[in-house]
Amino acid sequence: GGLIVSFGEMLIDFVPTVSGVSLAEAPGFLKAPGGAPANVAIAVARLGGAASFVGKLGDDEFGHMLAGILKENGVSADGVNFDKGARTALAFVTLRADGEREFMFYRNPSADMLLTPDELNLDLIRSAKVFHYGSISLIVEPCRSAHMKAMEAAKAAGALLSYDPNLRLPLWPSAEEAKKQILSIWKTADLIKVSDVELEFLTGSDKIDDESAMSLWHDNLKLLLVTLGEKGCRYYTKNFRGGVDGYHVKAVDTTGAGDSFVGALLCKIVDDHSIIEDEARLKEVLKYACACGAITTTKKGAIPALPSHSEVLTVLNGAQ
Ligand code: ATP
Image (tube, rainbow, N blue to C red; front, top):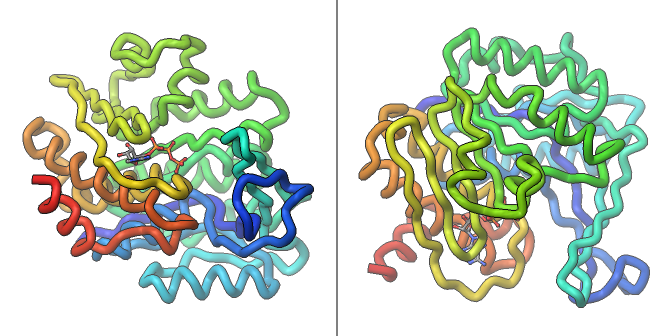
């Protein structure tokens, strides 16, 4: 199949060994590799697609461990650079007893933020049929310039551009800046996926409905998706709109559900972009993507929980 290149950050989440504690109360932490763009690349590979991750890691044990995880999962690391001076990014993440996620990032600066435009593997980026990215790589230079150059090179070479903003407010200098920068690259994307929370943030409306979703529409957009957690997703194209229900599962950790959803979608459309124009086929693909998202919530961590194609089929057949 055609190559899906995912651009951005890969890092290690440190998650408490016990649930429902604050970061300060946690008795210990487990390493959980992540970073949304890296998760998407691994999600694609696990489903049988061709994926490559582009980004920068520290030239340290954690950086090489992460590159190893990409390769073990069948993701090409030909676009990965290692920084001699800066460390691989770390994030301490906990789900507190009140259900709120608490993040503490170690990025001062971390290697991912130091990717320069000159370091990009442009041959790799130009060979992408789909180029996927988020917004964390827009926060600081020189990574921001690298992001812009990679995006433009992929677009010029004819790739479909896929954007999942993946809002992480604590990483931005302010909410206004986050909104402004996230929207600054809005109109370059062919496909955009936002969560319900991001829809509210970007529109400034507390309503999650078709009207607020459509306020995010732009003329060159081919597909807008709003994911709704256990309630599935809504889809919008130039010619039709609708929804796909979620699957009932016993969720233990929702980390990576959105990335799994995106990976599945990209895997299905990479070789046939016309699916986006055919509502019946698009709906089938979105059911598949929702099943992937649901499965990902049933196991702890993002990467260990990403399903294979046969696991998804089992869920889809069981639901019929
Ligand atoms: P992330 O936690 O990775 O940031 P997100 O907020 O981008 O995720 P969600 O809306 O949480 O995205 O999830 C993406 C998809 O995964 C949903 O559209 C749905 O199909 C599936 N999903 C997520 N949570 C659940 C759940 N609790 N039960 C069933 N399916 C779920």
